[in-house]
Each structure stands twice: as structure tokens, then as C-alpha cells.
Length: 553
Image 1 (cartoon, rainbow, N blue to C red):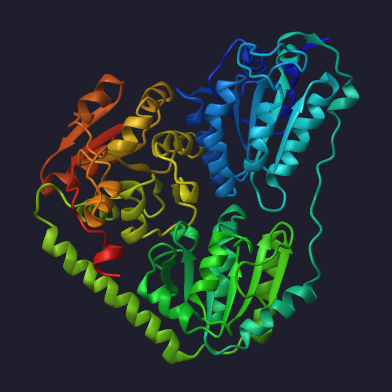
Image 2: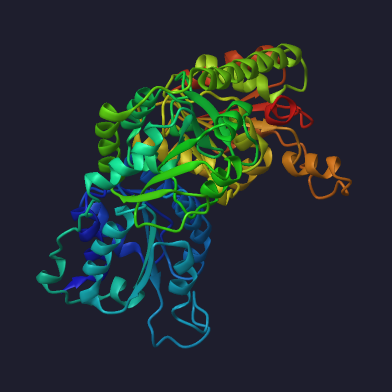
């Protein structure tokens, strides 16, 4: 006999879990006991959404599922937004939650009338959602969760476990813990060669590189493919870090706002090789909208073949790293030269935009309140090439780092992505620092988003992690306010009372720095990045600042 919660900890340990994110309740303390006994770190989040964000971020950065643990009812539903966000980001994570017994009466503590409501709620936002009410199924369900989360297109899994199992002595046969993890079957090399040949033969061709490349940790292969094709590389809007931005082939992003060079590359292309983009996704639909009806598109993606949203000549699915190896082999024998005029036209547009951004920066460099472009410029000057940037919904953590920050290392922009929930950066930054303590981590967030996740500064203090949080403090929900005033809407519900965020940070146990003048930005960032503790840089910014994507693009 064993406490059921300890059996959960055992399976997590056997699957290599080193760190979990929790907000404990009486239903889950026995899991924590088992984790502690096995020397697995148990990191306390201050809200279950934040625990899910931390698990999501760890999954993105390591490739192994991040694990969050919650109580039944509100613990699970609070985490749902973070899990849905992990789904859109193709991030491997597992949410382990207590659930009520199947024979629980209606309106029980942490319950509603339907005792399977959590399993049902998570089904559309996960690759697999299940509840376990038989102790012998606990190891099987958790082991399968690791397989499902990491196979094909990665994503989140929900495993609900009966609270009676977690809290009581149960009998689980040793044979239940035996498990052979599955492996994928890859398509034949001939299928890959056929898909690539039509791209390699085209004079005007472009690579479209998405998040699947990040999840496969396949940057090196994709750079080699770009070099072999000598063609422009375009990324979806929310994944500017899917390809090194300082590579000559990089032409920017499309989706919501399109970089002019990326627009030229796709509009004039005869063929597009899409790597790591789900064929049925919004990102595929964007590709279809930006290309000619006659263009040849080949998709290479993780997981099972899906109906493309855009015009496609070929869809090849499987293990993306293996597929990309096949592309490199095929291109070494078949690649022709890219049309030089086409290639140069894209490059000229990249350089024109860069010049216009420099002119825009010069015009706003000394203004107060501080222009966000000044912050982004100074951050790129002082941060390491491989700095991890976390971003948020809205302008401060979304539009500005998408528009102008140069991501020299891939998988370095961790953002709430298309699910676009607010309050993502601070918990994500905590998880990033715990996963990779030696890398710089900078959280970009507005004052509205900050007020939704500032409680995780307490977690930063408790874990002694030294990320930097940059708050663009403009006393507005700025993106929506600008939408209101530009579209003849009432300017209501978008003001934020002036908040001394630096002092708030100090009260929560970390260092706060207030910045009011442009000349103070660079020294403050340098000081924050050099500090051994978490630092919040509270910068008074201009809410009327025009995004680069609107002013220049």
C-alpha cells in the first residue's frame, strides 16, 4: 500500500521531471511530499494561471514537458487559460489536478453537479484530457501524458486524479509502473525529396519558418537549408525568433502587421517551403493570403497530416528534425540558384526599413515621456545576444518587441502568442531563469499586464532568480486606448491610476528602479542586468507612441 499522491511523484521522477509548479491544497500535499522525498523542486506560484505559464515556458525552453499541479475545481479552472495558451504555442506541458470522486454529491467543495467537468473543460484546449478514478490507472495515465505531450506536434495534457486516490493509501501493482515510451514512424526519404524538389527548382523561392522548428530545436538545420537555397526567410508574426534575425536571409514577419520585405518575398515568390507551421493553422492561412494563387507551397510539419488552410502542393508530416535532415540531403544535390533580382529586392527593403527606424529613433530619442523605441534600442545594445525576452498581450510586451527587437538567438522570445493572455511575462521569466540560470532574462510588460502578475515577484524573491522586469508605465491600457481614440470610440475603461511600480516591487521583495528621463534608460538596464537579484525597471512611457509597424511598415 502507498499514498496515491506518492505514486504520482514516483512517475514524474521516473520521467525525468526536475521541477514542478504548484499552488498546494490539502488534495495535493502528498504529491509534494513525494516530490520532496525524490529531491524534485516544488516551486510555489501565487496563482494557478501562473503555475501553468511556468510549466508552459519550461516546456518551450527544454523540450521536456513542464509540470503544474493544482487542486480540484478553481485550481484547475484558474489554470485553464495557461493550458490553452500552451496549446496554441505547441508547448509540451502536463497539468496534474485533483478531481472529485465520481460519486461525490452535487455542489461538493471544489465541484459542480458534473464531476467530470474539468476533464470536459480541458478537452478542447489539450491534446488529451482524462480523469483517473482507478488507482491502478494512475501510472499508465501519467506515462501516456508524457508521450502525448511530446509526440508529433507538442502540446499540453490534462490528467485529473481522484482526490481519494491522492490522499489515501491505495494498492497499485508494480506492473502498473512498467511503460515503454512510443516513438514516431517517419515518412520515407522519397516523400521529402519530392516535396523539396519543386522548391529547389523555383527561381523565386522563400522559406516560411514557424514555431515547430523551435519545438524541434532544429535551428541549425533550418539555417543550413536557408543557406543552401540562398533565399529570403519569413516568419509568422508571433514567432520572430524562429530564425536568427541577424542572418542576411531574414526578411521579417507577416500576420497582423507585415514587414514590407516579407510582403515582397511572399507576394513575388513562385514557391514556398513552409517548415514547422501547422497546415490547418492561422499561420498557414496568413501564408495563403500573402501568396499568389499559383504559388507552390510545401509544408513540412510535426504530427499528422492535416488539411492546409493555404494552397499546398505537398504536406509531409512526421518528426520534424528527421524531415529537415532529409531536406538538407535533397538540397545538396538539387538546389538551383535563387533569382538575384528577387533576392536583392527583398534585401533592399530590409535595409530601407532599418534606415527609416533609425531616423524615427533619432526623432524621438530625447522626448519625455520616454518613447518605447528608445527602450527597445537600449535593451538591444546592453543585453547579451542570447537574452531571453518574455512578452505580453498589448503594446509593451507584444507590438514593440515584435516590431523592432533583433532576436539573434532562436527560441528567445517567450510570448503569450496568439492566445494572447495578459500577465504572462513575470511567471514566464521566473521559469526561464529556473530552467537556464546563466542566461539573461528580460520581461517586457505594460502597467496593465504588470498589475495582473506582480504577485510572482514574490516567487522571484523566494527562488532568488535574477530576471529583469521592464515595465512600460503609461497609466493606460495603451493598445486599446489607442484603438478607441483612432476609431471614434468612447475613451472609457482604459485609464490606469498612476502607480509607483518601483515602490511596489520593493514591497514585494525585489529591487525597484524608477526611470523618468531618456538618458536614464541605458544605465538602468545595465544596472538591472548586472544585479544578482530580480530588478523591476519602472519606466514612464508615452502612451501615444506610434508603433513602427504602423508608422514605417
